[in-house]
Image 1: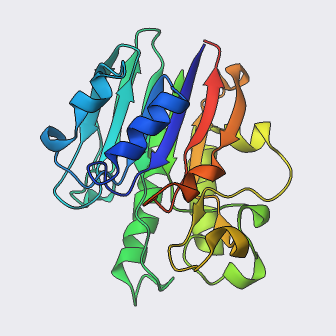
Image 2 (image 1 turned 90 degrees about the vertical axis):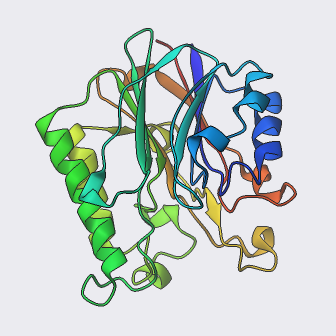
Length: 261
């Protein structure tokens, strides 16, 4: 059995203390971080190593993007893909000794205008998702876990107000359709919603809210999926809402699941 966590940390160096706190308090066996905003050689791996996280597979760039898989369990580098040809560090994969491959994604946010003609970043987001779909069609995932900040809240109860957000990037129908197409192509199982099927569920709250907790205008942007051959081994999903209240927090919180494999 192992526990996997995914967390958009919004700068791994600035928030290394929050990472080590999570490692100490929750001790996930595998921690996948997004938006590390650091070259790989400047990620403070020695802090994590001291807590038993002896393995890391990462892709980084200065000041932007960046993904890392940090593990107590032995992992090997399983490569990466430059989805949509953006030249960004937005995907990395690692393989466990039992043959399970973990994919860590940071899907582009898409900026503020949900129109690819007026906003090229929105088009890049849709193209990224389309290439994910095509990749899963071409090579059906098996013994695989996909985690990350997918920057889309797909269900009506994954946002604080469905109608109010239909024209807001992260919940527009075209984004939801593109994400569903990628999920369907790989027959991925949304582990979090399989475990917690009912009720509003969020993993992100904006920095703009004066009191994020009272306003509670959240969205579920962070996800854990499993390929159908191992989905039944997943259970115990949690979203660590209190982490949003830690000092100098990320605007995202960790999402966790356990796998009996």
